[in-house]
Length: 340
Ligand code: PMV
Image 1 (cartoon, protein in one colour):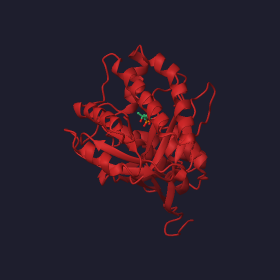
Image 2 (tube, protein in one colour):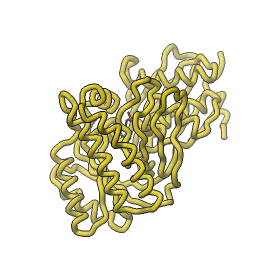
Image 3 (cartoon, protein in one colour):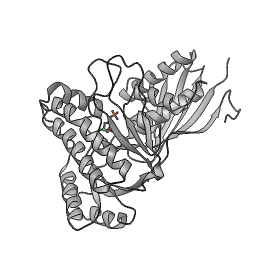
Image 4 (cartoon, protein in one colour):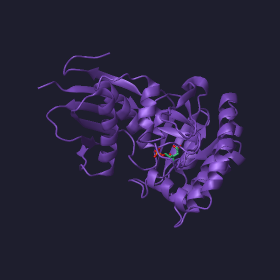
């Protein structure tokens, strides 16, 4: 019997400053709009993949619990592993053991770090090349936002084009290009009700504002990109808030309307505007969940944290900053032999 091949990878969530929302209609999991994000230090997914000839199906263990084989997450993981098996010629099933040090599936971008870590660990365990561009494309085929977590710092991902077979994110600037501070206002514990894939499909098929979002998103992306390169905080805040609000407006206008926000989400938006009116640099963005991600400067981080914790409905805050891309923690094949 051949030996077990295993590898462990660590990846970090990213927060989109220019949002991805909606897939192209012609398949291949290609984004309909360009997006730009910052990968975070301070939150991580650690994933071990072990190709094991004794297994008769792929297994997913998330946060210490085994998921059922028919769970949506198990099926998405098996889909990525099928691509790795097809590319490497391996046939063994794999055991995937993953944990997040932050809330899972609550709009905190856990699918981005999860599928970036899985793509890297599975590629390494299978003996495939692990260049970030390849990991990015592999991750993107399962979760578009995960393509960006293959890289650290400020990362862009263009929209898909007809005929694209592969599409990877591209690093725009390293994490130390601009030492922004991020304060996440957590407004609810537990998973969100509607996952992002279902939410964007529902929006694309029922919202009269979806075509308007797809038309408007590229110019917001260009404004975000220019502001990041120029380190222009006010311009970045204006463009990033527009991108988030236009994305959410397209969902709110779906039928039935899809509203990821709670009352506390709106209260945090108001608090960020008050901070700004008082001269504190701050802007917000919101993903497919009720939490609000507030960007500020390292100097103003303490004041922003205090202001957000005082908002009714804010349960706690998480601090983060721009950080590095996905990386291997260990790689060994066959069992016991340490890799690079
Ligand atoms: O790729 P997914 O399914 O994780 O979708 C992510 C969508 C947003 O987080 C809402 C926006 C983004 O660009 O990350």
